[in-house]
Image (cartoon, rainbow, N blue to C red; front, side, top):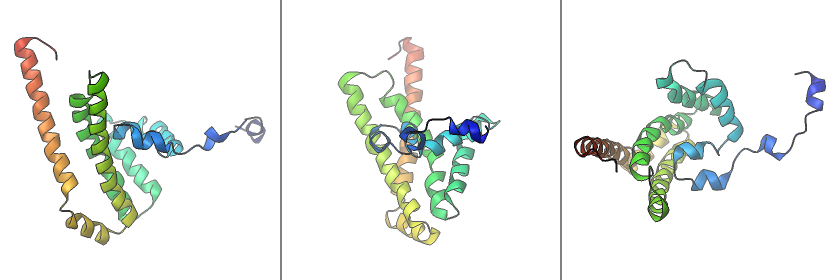
Length: 177
C-alpha cells in the first residue's frame, strides 16, 4: 500500500480495539477467551504464525512461544504463556465431556464449571506474568504446592479415561449418548 492508499482508509475504534474484557472473562473456555484478549496481536499471531507454521502438531506451541517473545524476556511471560498449550489439552477433553451435545440448563451449568476452572488456570498463569522473575514465581508456586498443574494433570487423565469408557460403551451398545 502506498501512503496515498492509506489516506483514503477510514479508521475507527475497531481498528485499535484490543480487549473485550467481558467476553475474555465470561466465555467458558480458554480457547474462546484468547480471541478477545490482545485482539490485534491474536489476529497477527493467527494469520502469520499459527496458520503458516508447517507442522500442525506444533502450531499452538510455536504460536505461544512467539507470543512470549513478543511480550519480552522475563521468565514470567514464558511461565504464563507457555502453559497455554497444556491448558488447552485439558480444556479440549473437558469441553467434550461437559459442553458437547448439551443444551439448556445442563449447558449453562457445564459452562459455569468450565468457566470456574478456566479462571483458576488464568489466575495461576497471571501470577507468573505479574511476578516476572523466576525466583519469585517458583517461590509462589511452591507456597501453593503447584496445586493447579497437579489438579489439571489429574483431571486431564481422568477425563481421557472417561472419554475412553464412553467410546467403549458406544461400541458395545451401538448408542451415542
